[in-house]
Picture 1 (cartoon, rainbow, N blue to C red):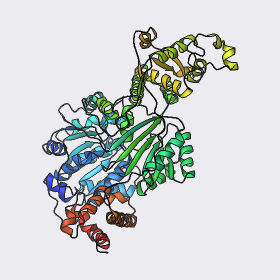
Picture 2: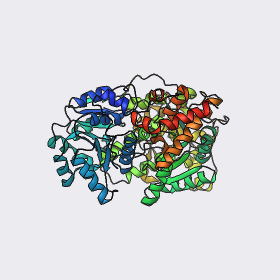
Picture 3: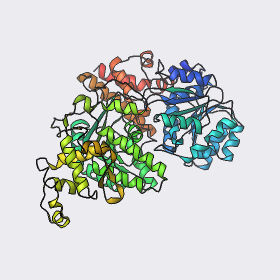
Length: 612
């Protein structure tokens, strides 16, 4: 895809002018200006910014401003297509090379590259490293190399791509060309690995806060997962687009079918579907309103949809890094969004079994187990979830956020020392060979045939917990696993085993405070929409008129609506109600090209409501 700008249009080389004239913004976000200045001066940069924090502008602006063509390394075709389409809408001469192009299209793009017609070229790492592509780059002038999703270089990360390991060759073959490594997900260890493997020892580090204050984090104990999800969607997400993550393909298919039966537009996405069905479902999600995708972790990296209002996890993610990246796909436009999750001990058992059966070397398995334990500990926290999440990425001393479940509804804690000793003792006396269900039955004094066959009705722990319900005991066992006092035997069908850490509790030398599971809330229906509580009747009518104008223009071009303007830009139009092109140009996100192309349509939409 190539866009040739109007020859009469002057492309300014000043980064601040490009920010305003091309992208329609008056001011840089935090750290963006510093990154742009570093690259404009020829220096390398490691850029860590949260999803929706403006990473793309950090390389797009200097690629436009510097002589030559900016070469952007991107791991997914969908991600490249999305970025290029958005740039073309802003009047930028951008293209991408990937395996999905026809031979003639690819040749035309290569010719445009050689002739210096492109400001940016997106390319997959595999193609970039081919002799043909490297020969092409030797014949042109790269303005910069930007390595997007740079965490893919980390062998300890959740999105490892082996081909990223070879990208250090860029610094050796083009030592004078600045390089940027960009990601939204990298703990301190991963940051060092990125710089080492990409051979960027002199790179300046630009590390923004990982905080996404517009996202509300909520975690609940899994009881009836489908009903819990239904309640969440009905009360808070009517008509909103979102992503529902499940651990297995079978569960994805089942959940998508169930949601459709309940009346939602729900589509499955996983590696077991054909490439055509995955493409079709992704396009419906990106281009439509109110579509829900039910997916495995195979879905999301290549999606730049800004108006995803929620991400729901029906199972425990593998790590905090995975959780942060997946939840970060919500609310990219900065408007309120939800990260909602239900989980249970069975999730831990399943993930442990997957780790043990992965065939990875022992060190890799150890790291994966630790990541899972960190994820589980996050779920069981009594304190602000955002504080725990940000501390994992090196941001200490963040104040309580006031926008997570533990802040909004502080969990009740209780002295669980005696109950924990009973649970641990039961694990020991039954031989450390049984799962939670059997252990709870013993503690409650269940008189079943199986318990009698095993002789467990003669144990001293039989019936000592009959004063507590099944749910309470399951919560205790789950939290003992989270605290590291018990471990799950992945090869023993989820049987629980004692760890060394449990000895002080068993001996009565250490007390233990646990959280008391919260009963399901019975709140009324509440839908969270952009601008909720901020619009009167007239403003809402204008909001809908602008959305309809955007839908029409997008449909005419076969584009997702957000590529015309983001919701946040439409909300600014509602607030300002511009009447002229000059006033419309002052709205964030309205650059010169979009003003010329769409200004009359949106001004007419505004007049149709304001003057009626």
